[in-house]
Length: 74
Ligand SMILES: [Zn+2]
Image 1 (cartoon, rainbow, N blue to C red):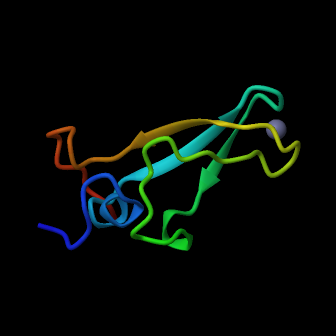
Image 2: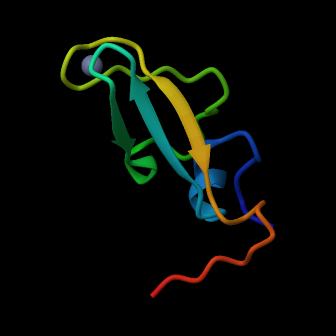
């Protein structure tokens, strides 16, 4: 088990999850660097703004941890 609660950014990093934000105004996805965020911060209801237009983006979380496919990298 990881050292961070499940609802924190630290847990997402430990579980190799990725987060992206979709800006409806720009119709573009914005990668979010989870490692740049305080790991003890709770991600539920976290808000991110588009780096280009400043609109709040819709958050998407994905990762291999819960898919059961055992994703391979490299
Ligand atoms: Zn935007």
